[in-house]
Length: 535
Image (cartoon, rainbow, N blue to C red; front, side, top):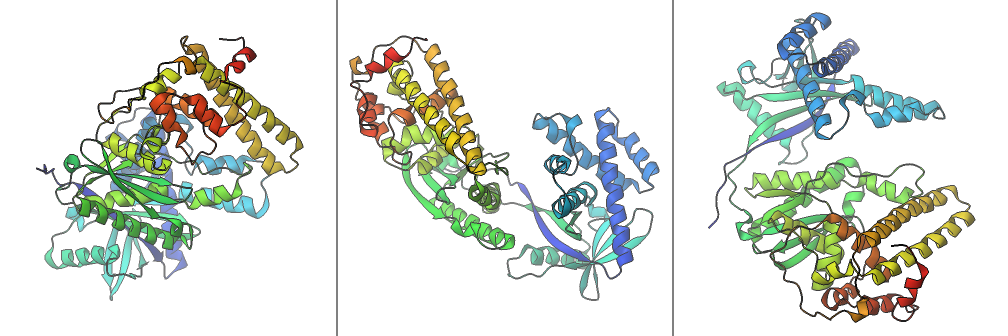
C-alpha cells in the first residue's frame, strides 16, 4: 500500500520585459537598481564582520536614503549569497559580484576592442543591475514593486524608496493556454475582486540594456501519492548520442525494462524554443512515471563543465553550451511534484563508471542505460559492491603490470603526436589528453603499490557463480576508478562494446578478454612482469 506524504510547496516564476514610456523613468529605475546592488555588496561585507540584521537595516536606510523594506531585502540577498559560498566550501572573502569568470576575462591584457566592451557591459549589468522585493500578503501582494492594471494594460509600479514612483508596462505575450503568465494574472485579478491577496516576489534584472522582471509566487502542491514503494524510474542524460535514458526498477532493485528519449531537438533553434521543448520532455517523462506508478530518481547536480577556449574542442564546447542538462532535470522535478510523484535526488559520483563496469556487461545494455540503472538503485538505498572477481583482479599484479605497460605505450605515442602536430588547438587537445593519461598512470601505479601479492590470473581458481544484484555494501570509489582505467586498457577494444567484461566478471579471464581486444598480447601476459622492478 502506498504511503501518502504531506503536500509540499513550489515556486512558479514568470519572466517579462519592462517598457518605459519615458527615458527619464527608465533612468531613475536604473539608478535605484544600482543603489540596491551596492546595498547588497555593503551588507555582504558587514555580515562577514558579524553585523546584526536590525542594526544593519537601519544603517543601510540612512546611508542610501531608501526605505527599510528595500534594506531588509538587500540583507536577505547578501545572507543567501554568503551561505551559498559556505555550502560550496568557497572562501567568502574572494567572492566577485558580477561573476568571477567575467572578471577574470576582463583582466586579460590582450582583450581589447568590441569584445572587451561587450564583456564589460555584461559584467557591469550583473554587478549593478538587480532589484529585489519580497512579497507581502498584507500589502496587496508586494509593497515596493506592485503589479497594477491601468486601462487594460498591466504595469509595474516601482517604488523609488523615497515615496516617489515610476511606472513601466509589463510586456508578455502568452502563446499557449497553459502559459504560466495567464494563470498568474488570473490569480491577481481574483485577488483584486475578493481582497484575498497572496504574496508574490518581484526581481528586476538588467540584460543587454533592457530591464526584465520576474514574478514568483508560491504554488501549493498535491500530496505525494506515487512513491518508491512501487519501484522507481532512474533518469540519466547523455551527450553522445544526446538522449534521456529511463530505467524502470523494481522495489527490490532488479531491472524491469528501459527506454530512451531523443533530445537532439534541444540543441537546435533559439533559447526560447529549447526552453519550450525542455518542458515538453519533462511532461513526457512524468506521463511515463504516472503510467508506471513509479517514483523518479535523478542526479543531484551542482555544476557542469562547459569547456574553455583553446582546449581544441570547439564543436564539443558549442554543444555543451546548449546542453541544458540541469535545466531539464529541474523541470522534470517541478512537473513531477505537481503530479504528486516522489522525486529522489542522489549523489551522481561514479554512477556512469559503476554502470559501465558492472551492469552493462551483465545485462547486455549500453553504458548510458546502465548508468541510469545505478541511479535508480541508489535512489532505492542500495550500495554497489565490487563483484568478487573484480576484487581479486585489483590484487592481481600481472593484470596491473600489463595495464601500466599499455598506458605507458599510449603516453609515448601521444607525445610523438604532440611533437608532429602543427595545429595549435589540436595540440592543446592532445596535451589535455596527455595530462589525463598521466593522472590515470599515477592511479594505476599507486594501486599496484597498494595491492597485496597474488597468483597470476591464469592460475586462480575459476569461479563461475554470478554475483547477486541485491545486498550490496559500501566500497571505495577509488577501486571503481582503477578498474575503469585498467579494464579499458586491457580488455576493451571499444568503449561502447562492454560485452568482454562479462567474461571477466564471471570467471576472471582477463587474459582471454585482452587477447580479443589486442591479439598481440604476448602469451599469458607474464612477459610484462619482467619490464618492471618497482612494487
